[in-house]
Image 1 (spheres, rainbow, N blue to C red):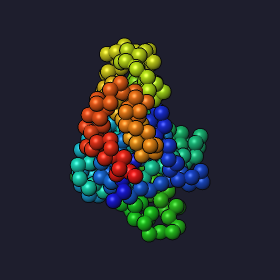
Image 2 (spheres, one colour):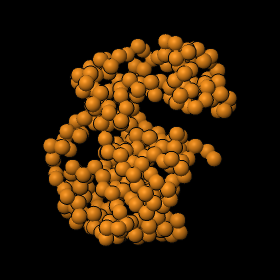
Image 3 (cartoon, helix red, strand yellow):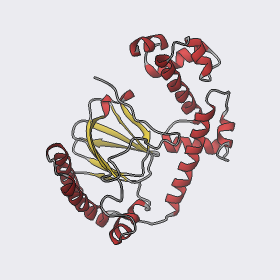
Length: 294
């Protein structure tokens, strides 16, 4: 079975277009286990997302929160929220991703009164448990939306109708706090995290330190550690090493450069250290990885 991976830009924003300008909606019947390293890695998008666990157990990471979603449960991910999904076995998670302007156009009364307050609120996500009546109602409507995508050629109108039903229930039960200090702090931290990530992406071939990474976002070293840990659950240096390894892996199957040359070009000063780290992350040697991808 082929593996999949999620594509993001330097800020971790997902680069795939969900739907199109005329109908900004996409349905993904995905198994997390099929993705590289059995995870849909850190990403965010302006679109809204609803995910349902039809089989298995999914771990959803949002900031420092790690939520276990068991079979039959679901989750809503708000606009602009960094998140990641993991699985320890085959985990089928049909999901929908759509623009906040699909249910109602921007600046319309419905958008301003019912949609804008949610996407600007302090609510990063909402879990849906089938044992809670209103949450189960949303899960049932989600199932109907998924079924429409599989069977109905004229699904667009009915899909939007069902999305409005979900939104009506969600809006009624969410505890919204617009423009809260917590949300502003979250956005500020996310912006600094993305700034430091961008610095790593631009300078990973060079010898860079934690102090240099922190300085790129005008924070202290301890501040940088906290922002990375709370944002993506690893340290800045660990992220730097992961990024260097991912760039090395790409070179291994797109070029015929020697392993020592690739190690040097991706910021490793020692081929031996590179090889140890590569094996730890990919569970095979750099040479074996190159042969497998050939």
